[in-house]
Image 1 (cartoon, rainbow, N blue to C red):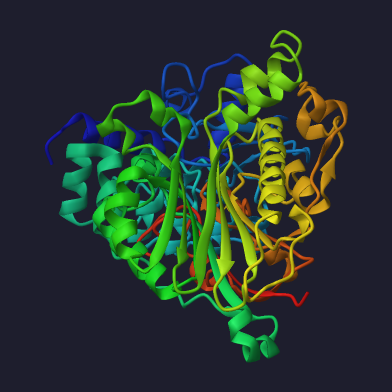
Image 2 (cartoon, rainbow, N blue to C red):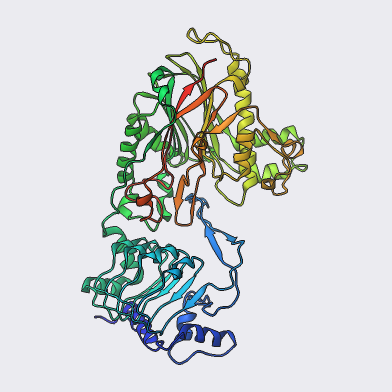
Length: 580
C-alpha cells in the first residue's frame, strides 16, 4: 500500500485506537483534558481535537452537562435555503456521550438503543461479534467507535446514522462495507485499518480518503428495493356513481434542477435531470390528473418538457419576480409555479399571477409611508415568491372553480413572512373571486354566485409551514390575531393592527384522514409542509393518495433518491362538486 496522506491518517488512527484499549479510556482522557491536564501519549489529544482548526471532532466525551442541538434544513434553494438554523431541544439532557470501551462485552443490551439523544458512543475493545440493526435508532450519533472487536460485518442500518461524522471499525474481521454506507453524507473520518477488506476499498481510501469510499458506495451500490405503490384511500365509494361531478388534483414540488447540488446522500446519477425527468414523466402520466399544480418549475422545464408532455392540457406558468432582472438565457433557469388543467374537463375563463413583493408594496401604500412600517418593505417586498390563480369552468356540470398555486418563502425562522404572504394571497384571491362571481353563469350551471366564498376553490402549494403554524391556522380558521406569535413582533400595518382574515371555508384535503406524517423528507427535516386546501362548503373530498410505504421509508434517510425524484412527495385528491 502506497503511504499517501490518506493512508498515513489510517495508520495514525489505528495507532491511537490500539493504545486506547483500557476501560473507559475515552471518558477518562476527556475528563483529564477538561480539568486542564493532558491526555496520555497515545495520541488521544489529537484524536479528540482533530478537525478544522481548534474545533473538537470528538469533544465532550465526559459526562458533562450540555444541551442537545440539531440543525434543520428545510429546503434546497441555492439562494440560501440550505442554511441551517439551530434549534434547542426543550428537554434537558445532562449527557450525550457514552463510553463502554474495554469491558470485554460480548453482547449489547437492547435498551442502549433507546438512548436516542446520544451524540457519541464508544464500544471499542470489546468482544462483540455483531452489531444489532437497532443501532439505527441512534440517529444523532456523530461519533461511533467499534474498533478492536470481533465484527465480521456491519448491518445495513448503519447507513441510517444521518449525523455520523466519525466511524472507527479498526481491527475487526470485516470483509466488506455495506453499500448503505453511501448514505453517510456527513462522514468525515472512516477508520478501516486492520480489517480484511477488499484491496479495491483500501486502494480507494489511500487515493481519495473517506469521501472517496463513501461516494463509491453511494454511486455504485445497488439502490434500495423498489417501494410498493402508494395506496389510494377511498373516502366515499358512492361518489363513483357520479363520475361527472368528480375531478382529481395533484400538488407537487418537483424540485428545480438547479437546486439538486446539496443532496449528498443521493447517487449522482439519480440527480441528473435526464434520470429525474424520466421518473417524473412516469409519475405524472400515471396520475393522469385533471389539474396539476406544480412548484419549482423553471421556464425551460415548463416550455421544453412539461408543455409537450401534457399536450392535452392547458397551462399557465409564472416565474419568481427575479426573472425581470435577467437575460433570456438566465431567466429560463428561474423557478416558479405552473398549473395544468385537462382541456377535455375544464375550460379556462381567466388567469392571473400574484407577485408577493408587489402585493406587499400595495399593502405599504395603504399604510402611507415606508418609515411607518419598514418591516413591510424590508421583510416582505424583498421576497420574490409568487402565486398563480386560474378561474375554470367544469365542462360537464358547468360548475366554476378557482384554483390557486403558490410556493411560500422557505426560511423556518421567518414565520412572519410566510404568514403575511398567505394574508396577501387570500386578499388577492378574495378580490379576484368577487370579480369572478359577476361572470355570467354557464348554460349548464345557471345559478349565479353571490360572492367569492360561494365559488368552489382549491389552493395548492408548498407552504413551507407545519400544521402548528400560523399559516395553517389562518387558512383553516379564516383569521389570526395581529399579535400572533408567528408575527414575532414585526409590524405589518393593518395585518398587525386588526389581524388577518379571509372569508373562505378552507380545509386541508388530507385532514380528512389526519395530515400525512410528512410531505417533505430530508435527513434533517421531515414534516408536512405541502397542502391541498379546498372550500368545504361546496366541495367534498372522495379519495386521497396515501403516503409512501413505511417499510421502504425505514430504509432510507431522505429524498430525492433513486425512486423519489424530489425532496417532496406528490399530493393527490379526488373531489366532488356539492349540490347547490
